[in-house]
Length: 59
Image (cartoon, rainbow, N blue to C red; front, side, top):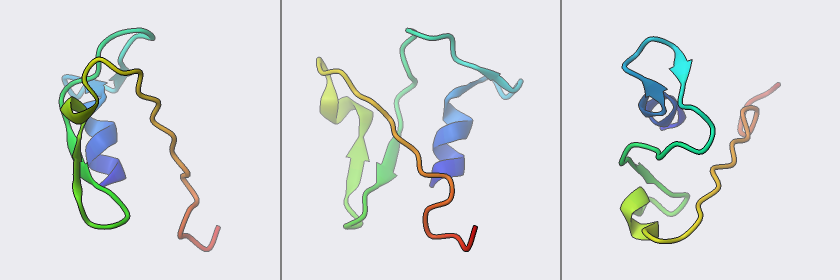
């Protein structure tokens, strides 16, 4: 799930991150309850994506 989202946030697969302040592409992911959450669900609101890279890992 995280890899899919990160891939969407890269420009055309060239490894360049989206510029700060640019619009994110539309995406959907499953939340911790298994429900689908779409970026469009938050239209007109500020969204902050917060990642915990070591969550659920032994590291």
